Image (cartoon, rainbow over all chains, first blue to last red; front, side, top):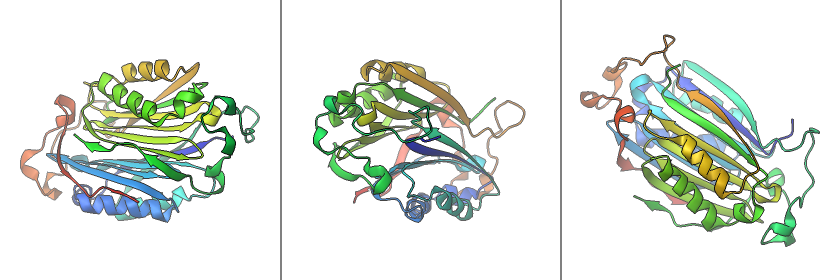
Length: 157
Length: 157
């Protein structure tokens, strides 16, 4: 069915615990996975936790990638949320499996934002009158990545 | 079954388009939702896209919250990924529904990291020998939030 977003829930079991506990390596793998999927990277934020475990987010113009690692269980949970038909999230999954030396991967694909019961794209300007900038409505995500217009305050607390 | 993480896929249809297109408001709602769930906020990153649409991530010590809004369709996709049993993600969902004036919400709960077929918690130190810091293994996520130890470079491109 036609949906606004495609969301891959990637379960990576039996990975290399050493790699999953290396902040720089995990970040590099997820950022490269986003590039391999042809995503446009907007922001990258990774944190390492004590005693160990890494959480990371790659905000892309077409939505996001995230990862949470439990090296003590050789497990990582990855999400790849994309919109449009241009990106190649499956290539990102293949890369993650390879780089984390995952011996037991599984993927569930969930469609997000199924708004039409007729299995076709919705017309534009559904609620344009209620939006602040009604003059330029187009579904840029299907054609080319959305462009960042403004970033809110970012903080680390 | 016992799982390392609980992931709520929150579909918010028929929301207020005006609210979903307001960067500051969307950020405030998601950050407050994280606090209502008793999450420990580590980092906040929000971006507004042209012509409109907002993407935001709230990295929490217990995993993350994310949102992508399509105000032109009065729709937002929210993810609430938590670990441990202390947080109250359902309270966050209720708050989001109220603040976005959502008339058509739905939630799917997905367990992430089901590693044991026996429906009980795994023993610790499954792969301690492969980890750089084997001296302090404990599942802090169940007892109290993980503490940030180190942040990798964060960049906006």
